[in-house]
Image (cartoon, rainbow, N blue to C red; front, side, top):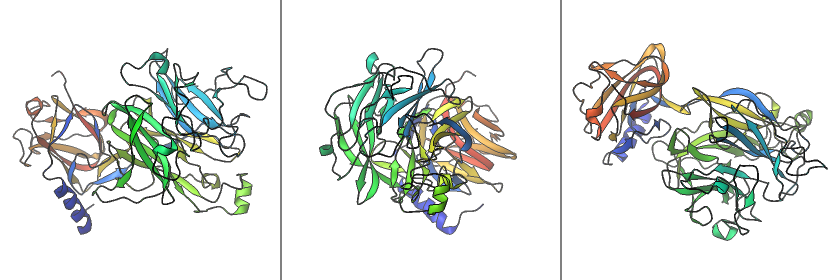
Length: 493
């Protein structure tokens, strides 16, 4: 594969735009190839968006208090739970189509591995004369879009280890807390972000998310607004989860720095990636109003609510590293609607909040499907660790050169995959792009295989400690290979 003249012009423009920037200090952080943060130039290599593997339904919304309008799911991994941790799934129970949050409930499912889920009988809230259910909240307006988090801020009070955002435009965004993720209370009666705090005519009608950022050392919120009739995302920040400031509209850019398309993004699901928390991953529900696939007879055959088959939705992938810009490096769909009419109705294919690890080499994202149908459920999709996207070289080969960077450690580790005929060789250059003796491409030992983490070697060994703290570039010569991530680490010889 070779780049067209137009593509080369774009890449040269992209490289020239940051030619005078200071070196990126990546220390010993893991860096994923999902944006242009480290990339200076590419030739014969492209950014490749992953295709998550469909692992099938994991939770069916089949209880009387759940129903076809369940949605706005959140998956948490509580590593501090007894027995080595557990997974917790929160979702809205909504048996009938209603407005204004009336009659909605918040449900909880649990899992030891993220693969098999149960619905505990919590005995907290009565439904239809019984407390034999998995309900944790039943407050009109607040259960509409309840979105919890595990608060990782150092020194957080034990009875506030779990927090949540919930509420609509009528209530404002309300803050809640819990010691265990089961028993919840309001942190205060007044909303923490009110309608008057947001300079747009309509807001909050979606799953609005928050988390503590260890990189920015503050809480961040990402919530839905309307601007010029299009569903958009705003960001705000807080030191204490109660007082929020700095509301700003998020923008979108492509790899070359130019603006990316503005589309209806129904949910944003922004959260720190658990293996690289400096990178906020956003697996959004892209909503295409009026993009109708089914006719009335086809809709009737799958028993979808007659108000919910005249639009289409899928999932897209974005990232941000702070500030008011999302990187839409790859514009294609991340998770396409599946085969069959049930996947082509309104408000289906909405991703759950958070990506979690579900195996030694695997992570999972969950997607709400068959919305407004009797078969409504949550489905699991799997990816390799760090595998949202990759730098991909064809059989003919290609190269990538990074921006100048500094690091900490004595080993370079790669997450990569090659074919039997393919491979990756690495050259370390100085900031001016000159090969460093002992670390040239001719010195490089070709890296072949498929591993989540493998140390890079040269003829004289793997030790790069003498280069730590100095501005360097990495040149990757690749053939029939994918490069997902890298990091530097301190290892014993």
